[in-house]
Image 1 (cartoon, rainbow, N blue to C red):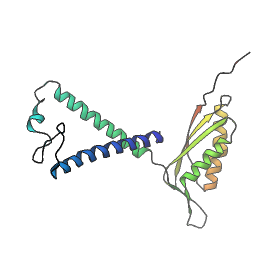
Image 2 (tube, rainbow, N blue to C red; image 1 turned 120 degrees about the vertical axis):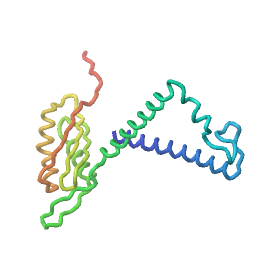
Image 3 (cartoon, rainbow, N blue to C red; image 1 turned 120 degrees about the horizontal axis):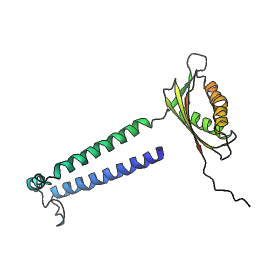
Image 4 (cartoon, helix red, strand yellow; image 1 turned 180 degrees about the vertical axis):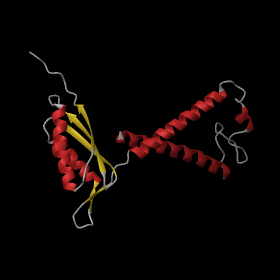
Length: 195
């Protein structure tokens, strides 16, 4: 999801930048006296971008206002989806580790995620693992995706993950608790031939 979101962000940013650069650059160039091509939106320095006739041309048509409202509603929904995706994807940058001296130490969240995923991949039946930390640095929460081998028992993998890997991570960081949401999925494999 995060890779897809990064791609969407880059594409939207590139498109918005390109539109603003072309539109702003053309208005500036024509305002400074450059002659535009015959097919361009406006013809000279004293011409407006959208004339009164263009603004009122479709107003009396029955389809115009429902279409405008539908397009604007779609833009609002897409903007809200994008905003919620930005807020939801925040990862925990650091975890406060209790050192016993009252000060504490900061552990990079990415390092703890890598250790959680690496230890989970050493369990029998776990092919791949990904971990993400969320929450506050004093009370982190883990979200872990485990890709299980075809012959793995999901309940065994989940039990070993929670009793070994999660407990080890919690104790190593000196946390009182480390709640985790674990998502299990099977790894696709090719069918075996029976002879």
